[in-house]
Image (cartoon, rainbow over the protein chains, first blue to last red):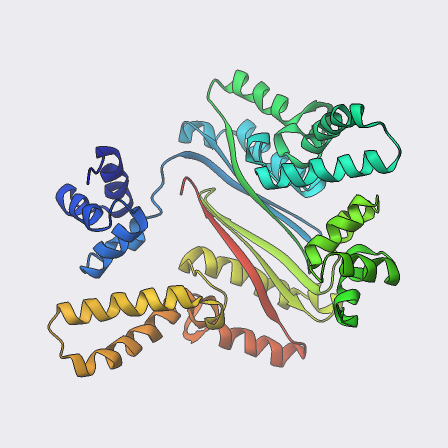
Length: 196
Length: 196
């Protein structure tokens, strides 16, 4: 079996264990990364589990709680710690958290919407259009129009920015990228609603 | 097919749609709740998706961010909004969030640890003990001792409370339940580490 240098490197980064140990564990695990970690742990290389979460990027974790009932946490990445400490960037992170609280997106970007969800939504819109008596030959067009609205409702980057609804969240971030001169990525978010 | 009154009630609560509509949707979906929601949505009952998140409990969402690099959000439930607004309860929620930031639990309670994880941990401890030359007849005992430590490390309620390590988080909450006179439950938490 051939183990690529890249997989060995990933395992080394995750575990802090030396090259040959990592390569042998991967060979034993037939290339499965998680199984290789388990093998290294069984050998008593106990640092493994701890180092699996090493920092790889700069940026900020931000949160916003509305009235104790809706809470949001976001991670926004940038390239340097210098930018992460910049007041402009900190405001951006807070704004993104407030956006998620107000607009309840389900995904960060269009590309994150799974095929299952897309297929289910398309089917629903088609059935709705058909139920209102629309002819078959225009159904697909109606569905695609409705999907654009679906993205603008459910994907954080596509949503109208709540503090300036004429632009999208994506546009607002693009303006910061231009001004700050570093790439900025919304990495992830989570939103809790009390009792949901 | 028999649809229980309880399932119909759950669908009504999730969708706000009337009894007969819900029952028929469940019959059509052969009792599958998610499929029944999709059927109701296809019929244009568009309030459905929105009401799926209705509040059912009181309490607070709290969060804690350490240095912009580690963020935690928690939901702690109580029985009344009166208690949720109490300063003592608010301090408890903050303390729980700080606990998660400091001690990085993976589960809320012992019962939440999945069988897969338990089996994998037991196997690792057994292999470790065997590797140090321990005789076969004491391995199970060693494994069970190590599991107690596993729970105290990975389950939030079993962890030593960081602000008072002589007691567990569970004990700290029990003291609040006694003092406040309402049941208190840590419902869920999430922890972000920058770049993980």
